[in-house]
Length: 282
View 1 (tube, one colour):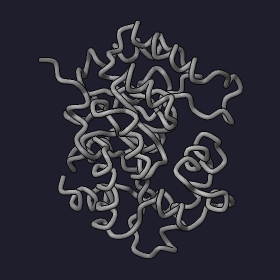
View 2 (cartoon, helix red, strand yellow):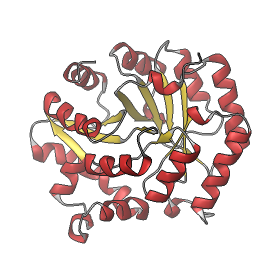
View 3 (cartoon, one colour):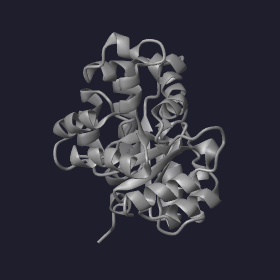
View 4 (tube, helix red, strand yellow):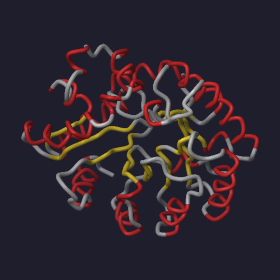
């Protein structure tokens, strides 16, 4: 029986911008026991970096978080998927999405465009089981459930995850991203986490609308964000405390959590990944 990529994901993976990834880091993440590495920052449709990271590892699943449908033609992306799947069968999960209207000049009818994009990918041979959508709102969550393997929501809380699972139903994959800072001092942790939430996400309507749906007020969303909002979106504390907060997504119905570790400056993240792997009993 063919094994689907979701079987490789495990409970926890690492989310990191593509510009911050190397084959050596991917190998280190695999050795620590994480099931997947999510390549963030709108990787290009040729997906050469994904292939290089798969070449450097043996069991780690690679996922895109996400390919922006406005940047790359669906047929180009489908051809890249076929190339990668041929070399590394069952280890690549293609995440696609609409990006942000503020950053995309041609942004129009995003839902219809996304549905069409998914249709082309499926028609060009990308299996439904290897495709997920960057879904936030109910409409795209339903599209993810009906046409793809599931959803990869970004900048969300366990409360969101619980509602997303209700909308998706029992079967589809639900793999939220969550930011973390390993620091037991709340002020220091917020000093690292707050800028990464404020810019750009508190200026992007798809994220602020989603946070409003979760009950966050205009006061919470204004300026650099309230302490309560930052604490909800960026888990901080000891590795054990952060692990407990991440596990809250699994308790709320997630299948997998993509962890984005935030550090001061350009610190090597492997030490933090190691602490998290131990706390999460990987």
